[in-house]
Length: 420
Image 1 (tube, rainbow, N blue to C red):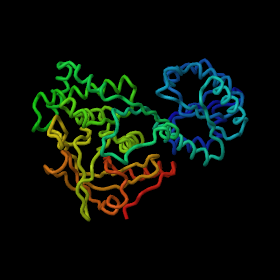
Image 2 (image 1 turned 30 degrees about the horizontal axis):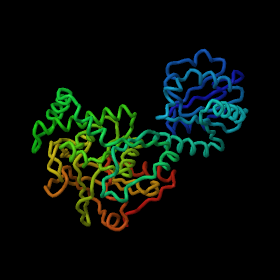
Image 3 (image 1 turned 30 degrees about the vertical axis):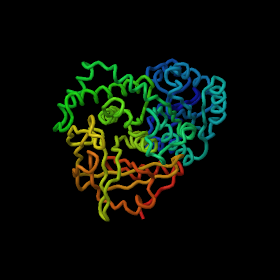
Image 4 (image 1 turned 135 degrees about the vertical axis):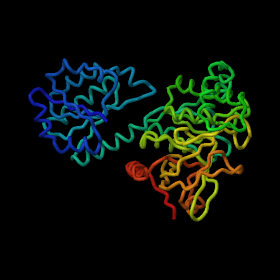
């Protein structure tokens, strides 16, 4: 994160670093902050390109007398580009009160309000400020825009999210995108454009089984269409009522979701918002793409999960298959490495509960009785899944991320479900 410290010309950078040594050190070490100090005698140097394209994560007000400095810095930022309706931004200030810092912050906060920009001040002891910065950092990382292509699948009767709560608590905007728009647009994609995607997929795959060249071409059209709509609507994530696409277009969105996840747009299926939020958090908090899967077979020692799409970057190899339930279109059979994983689900209408556990993959089996990508973890999920499960779908993330997820959940007072 980036923090700009503002000081008056009556003080020096050395004064600020000495006066706030403990706080600055903790911001750099615990919050991974990149800190820049700017004095009001340096006003000609603040018109740097780096300030024109981004708003710092926080301004630390070190002294009084910096109100005009802030105003001049603010005038260099392309606020209209950054603070669109799709990307609202709250300006965060840090002020512990020394050296008239709180007084200056209050004046700046009022200035921001007068120009229609939301702001807030983090004030208190160093410990309280660091805690508030960490929480602000985590919440801010989730702000974005999610698209729902159609309603959740009919069988998902417990996987919705309170969309007003998402917006108010996490700054996440959700928009509805009619399935008919998607269906109509798929039919307009030029075959030559889709051919490039299809050829790249064929070249990348270890093998092609059921799908024909025509099937792969149609799946590529679905991918290009969903991607284009995501770009037009400025989406950070999306989920689609995918079985309706199978019926209307004779193709699947499995390939589209695999590719979109690899390209940075978090993409889930069946309109499952709770699982999409789990995937979204994995991407924003842990920096990892996720495999959205159904728990499919449980023993007292292991748990097998399966689904028909997976980010290709999670896999050692991929095989192009047909969709398991329908036998139509394209699905992905991913062969995952036998390594460490984190199984995770964030759920409830107001995302007030979660489950997380770390495990080792012991097998990547294949059976015609389950969805195409299958993985077996060395964890007994029976006590949790069969009595206290948070829905059907869960996600699998490569690596060990349980403590990182728990810290986020504890900050946001989310209740953990345990496997007992």
